[in-house]
Image (cartoon, rainbow, N blue to C red; front, side):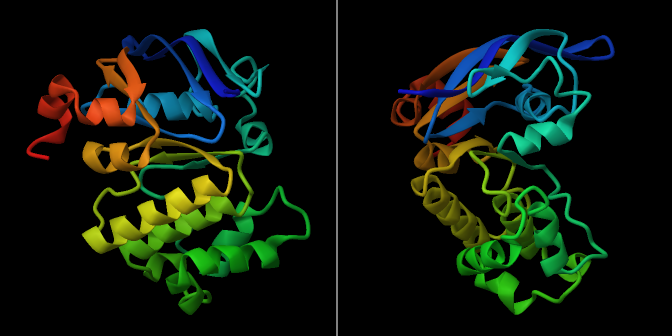
Length: 239
């Protein structure tokens, strides 16, 4: 199976605090992979390092066999141009721009296709079409998350990266977003997902990565992690 993304001995530090310790893993093309772990385990640090938002202390990150980490921190926009779209925790939409304008910003690297791609996003999220001229800041939390995901899809990413997409959302909105993520994956997009709802994440993922205090402790197929007694006790509660 073709490897799309590889972390090799990646270390990240914030000041004197080490967030990731020699983390290594590979993500095959076409899969949904979820990163599990408690708060402070280093999950978001993986995504931020990949997107060039924080520098590496050591190791390397490669995408399509090209080492990104040698330049990504100084040129994060080039990471997006390589086909990586990041939906951050907190959504990061532009509240004073309309839904249409937010979506069009997601298509900045795709010349001449924004209208067609916008219709594709509206097919996934009809609620956004109903509110296409509304300011982003007037949307509900669920609608803002739909907008954040839709904006990322506007760039036709090879790899879609999401940080806590279910955070603070109603169950029916969470179900919708995860159903759309499965559809997006079936259309050929690889997905890397950080998600506190471990049971939900493992239900849609092909495999999972477990981080504990910045160290990778386990990587396995999602179905195996769902049945792993230690994982069930630590992350799955009564499921």
